Image 1 (spheres, helix red, strand yellow):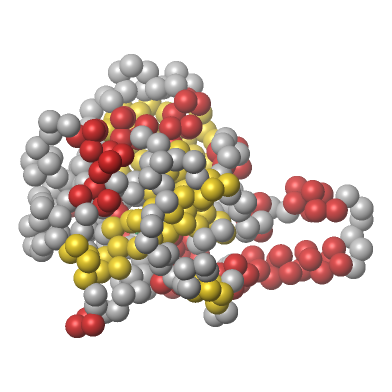
Image 2 (image 1 turned 90 degrees about the horizontal axis):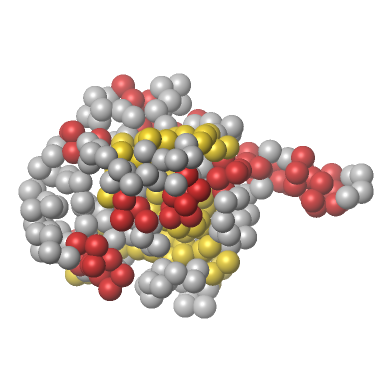
Length: 326
Ligand SMILES: Nc1nc2c(c(=O)[nH]1)N[C@H]1C(S)=C(S)[C@@H](COP(=O)(O)O)O[C@H]1N2
Ligand SMILES: [Mo]
């Protein structure tokens, strides 16, 4: 893979190199037909004529949200795209990259309903067009102790909330991922009660750091990272950031999440990153950044409370016992 160094000396794949192959070919064919003098009207015409899945470059603006820029070096894109948790495709970290290409991300609809004044089913393009796409660099930390720093592309979920107008009775938001047996081989497993479900308290969902992401590293999300849209909640363990969303539902009672059903002692509803609250089977005090080596050679870093976003989010949990509400 071709790489180019960024201003911190880190190397990132050149965008065309991280474009899924089929899309890359479609784009090349388009450029060729343009070069050979396709009918006038130029870019705008073909952009409208093409299925938008073929338009892979996203043009985000830098984020104005406080705390959205991590100071850490970015994780290499190919690491972030080949070491994934997406259990619908298998339990191995390499399974999503190997199998998720079978998932169809077009057409795609997201139903936003429950306790809202304006329930609505959005077509992906309408949803993506709701707000300016921003690039925000966030850390994501997995409960198993690895972390990464990703330039996500999306907008605050809060923008969508405004669109549907949650009622006063709405206290929580439930997120549901796609469960498609035809493309997701691991739905056969009963470790998770599919579809994958997650949830946030309404104030967490409204927090500006909570991102509805459509892309990363300047491109649309690769399937294995949760295409065509996912949640990114940077101060919580990775499992809260549900991928490939098809439904967002506003409810009064705290939703039971997929991981809570499977192992409630191990994966709580809040799942705030916290070095002082251990997982029952391992410490959460340190973490390994993807790319920082493996096995004996792995460099371990101290884990930060709220994954380093305490200044922004600690207020949401004032007075709460974080060990009890893990
Ligand atoms: N639908 C769905 N969403 C999911 C998961 C999953 O298995 N299925 N895994 C979660 C976990 S445990 C993590 S750590 C992150 C991983 O995101 P990444 O693969 O983009 O790094 O996705 C989360 N979202
Ligand atoms: Mo995770």
